[in-house]
Image (cartoon, rainbow, N blue to C red; front, side):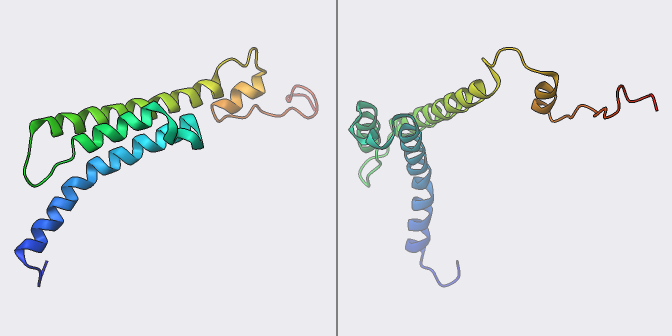
Length: 124
């Protein structure tokens, strides 16, 4: 950026690098809130996730490979939670309805059956 010092640009790049784990943490907490409701902060899963993110936070004194591995594991866990939620939504939408009428099946795939107002459609 014009007019910015090297220290400012270095600070911006560090903030950009650290925003991804924060985004993953927020995503995991969002999924926990969707699963458990408003009392998700009292759950063991919430405490564990927050403890792990605090433990693997990068400071100025240390840079370790475990942080990268923890970030990858957390991203994978977020993907698992989101995929499980999406699977349950799709499962509830398309499964377990029993026998369906042809009109209902056609509407599921975005089609409409032709209407036959006067009988079979070919007679006049």
